[in-house]
Image (tube, rainbow, N blue to C red):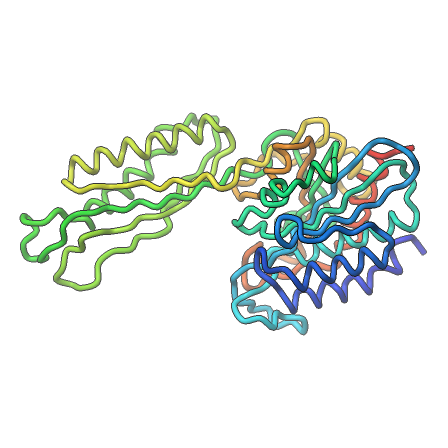
Length: 382
């Protein structure tokens, strides 16, 4: 029997119980308390309330000076679950649709394995992060002194990936997840009667023209060799069939991997808005929020991870980054490290992340634990 087998059934039960009791970002009080309890029972030094609800478990072995951080996110999503599973969410409008419950269980399992048989010399910091889903929990932990209190010479994070076959492990040097920007544009006219359009600037028409022009930015203002996405996802305006509304709001998202491309997209959007103002005699304001930077893996850390992963499962060099975002990016701006994908796909067309029918695949839990353990033992080798 290997060192992980006895842990799997209790960890699966814990994962499913966390799944049934999901908590949104910065409200993970029950989840954090359970994590802290398991870490203490495992013999780790435990620190709570970091960056709000964050938890860090500290494990030291030998007298080696090296340090490593392993991070798991723990928040749920504001989505109604539709899986019908026995452990389905009991909280209306909230569920673990991104597998953070599985991430927690795998990192707790790694802490248990390493505490019982370290086979390393140094310090591992097990970082359980709140509020990854758009609220910047990683940044909150950093601002609360995460790396000053728990120095990490290198940091790794693991995320399940339904698009990859179960048990495969993939990463790449350089960009692996996109920068996430969101924008809100307010178009303001005067409002008036729909039968008298010559008397009233048409904010609906201005918005329609704006949407068309925004959809040319990637194709005509971004180099073909660069990856970027601009999507308009919201249009709000009007309330009656015979009224030209005084204002219309247009919103959406931008994803990119290069700060220069990011700058160019925002600049071009502002230029387009100035043209819309002149063309339609309206005023337009742009609120542009760069809320998550691109996730950029350290080259050596990524190569090391692929070498280690090859001894755990099937290791793949990811051919391209994903346009989705991840606030582990803030940690990688502070410390070298890498973000890894753990394949969990089963059957044809498995539900993707953030889908109401998604569930973490417990069959890959052992692989995830093994990978965490191997990363720690490699970096902190005697």
